[in-house]
Image (cartoon, rainbow, N blue to C red; front, side):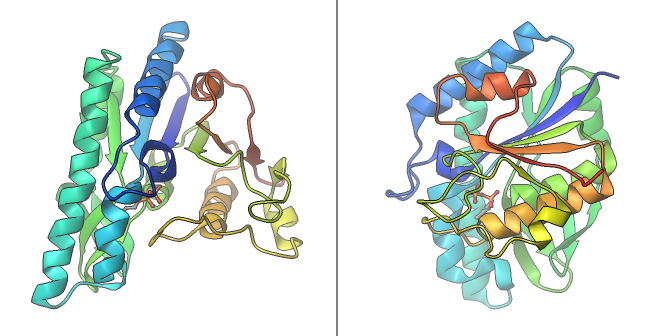
Length: 267
Ligand code: IPE
């Protein structure tokens, strides 16, 4: 089978972090066009798309502390509110994929198919998602609330979903497109680190800086650590953290160009 790529569109990229529940429609339009262009240039490319929540889900998630657990009636109200915001953003992305770029895509909402325990995925029937990939359809997942046998409910980020999916689907590459040019030595005025491996990360003096916007699912350091976990388990997989803001970057990355920070195993 042809190579599989996971592409995440970060919440900071596709939403306006300064205004609650505000999409960046021009950027989303350009991004879905770039996905279409890459698929046209390389029809055998198989892509699993994921997206974050940005100023949609993170705002109620922070207000109700949803990631830490859901027990009271008030917290369940918050859980539902996060679900509503996360799905609203997903609807906007699905709409753009269809209307702007004519891409055959189906959303796989984590809230309705994932069961977690203590924030770790226990059950997720991936047969429909695998069937979508085989049919040439773009499966779309996104950071969402999920039911959890220990926490009641919680939130899984796109990176959490990717970590589980990577073990099952073994992607050749994982592309994390955000609003930053990569992982910085110091945020925001340091340099972009060209390559991070488990060994180089262990020697890093300071952890990569956090993002400025509201982020309940951890900043850059937890993202890097989660991706290091993936490349250690799957040494053939390569991860890129790069900016999707610049014109053409997402298309180039999908077609194989190395952009931003590359995270690989030591081998
Ligand atoms: C966050 O998912 C999910 C919710 C807050 C509902 P992500 O962690 O993948 O989203 P971003 O990229 O930080 O916005």
